[in-house]
Image 1 (cartoon, one colour):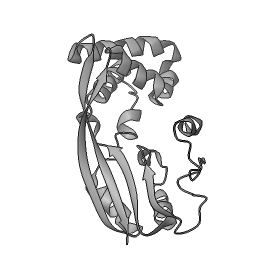
Image 2 (cartoon, one colour):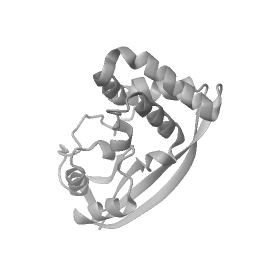
Image 3 (tube, helix red, strand yellow):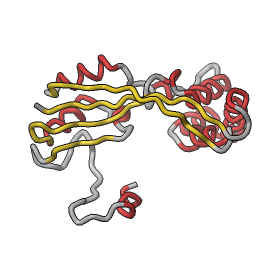
Length: 194
């Protein structure tokens, strides 16, 4: 991803560097802004990630990130998750509920940011429409292009194609077989370093 980003933005004042969000390799008060695009929900220790963002920000700086709202408010994801869970009723894969769509409570997020020193927190709900050329695209994306795939393969690797097909059928049944669109809801969070 960094290599791809570097091809899109080539500027002398930009350095691309891989780093652990929970142990940032930068000096205190180094940045005016820290931005995280749909990554916070994957931090094993969110409080530590928040502490690090706060540490590297200058006074007056901002920590801006986004997180998905609950799974039920993100239609393609919810549809695929339900279809996949139905195929494994005794042990449904719950990656989507647990991780990318599992950290969405504005009160919890605000409290956690304030606990590490962010003085003011703003949270804005943003609703968009996701579009795909076919019902199969979201099914492939979720079943084969996210860690949900590992959870499917752990249960029965030989069923990955079947599970993807079933998810595609579920999306088609709800949104139509050709070009599809579904609601997405996320939050944009801004923590202010005072």
